[in-house]
Length: 284
Image (cartoon, rainbow, N blue to C red; front, side, top):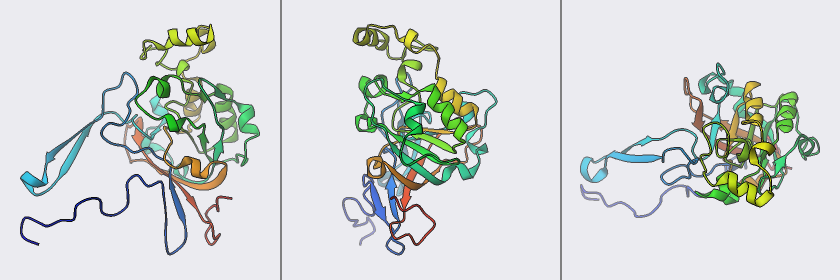
């Protein structure tokens, strides 16, 4: 190698798009539940794009460094209570034990504007236990993109489902949609600060024959119910969630220690122990 460097071309290390890996010594299996974060990630309509710049480069400076500008509601991210609840806990104030523990990945496929109800959660398998981390796989993560379909036509969690989860005293709730609520109950449609998607209310009426505000009179009711109870939420679950749907697993979802933060990008991982040698869910 000369002083300019003769470096191998292409990727080294782990493929950043890989959905799972195993730890050779223990046999533990790790499954990504994230979409990739970075330049070009879809942003919520009305939000600024994520900008990533390199103030230092190898060619000029012999080192590379990056900075980003954008909010935290991009890709797979965690919302703290303060996001919607005045006086609620910020990201740094949340109990760490909410972000690691036993949980379920529920297989609840839903289509355009459909809802996940309390009745759906009551009969879901595996059964939800007190203290669980609950991840809901509606199948909508497969549509993740900068599109009206992904952000405007998504399913959502009904208010009665959110209140059921509050009563169950779960630790954390994640879903593979852009919002906890149906987008018609958010500022994407005819609620406060909206419609951010200008065509959406008229499109809803054309498709259903009904007014969106009449069908969804409350603003973010499910999300506000969860956050008001101190239960943080994760939106845009993705990655390999289909690999673990319908299973009880151990979940890790550690955010930054972000003081005053309302939200934070988060790495969500399902951990399985097929051999049963550790106190980690087997995934059965």
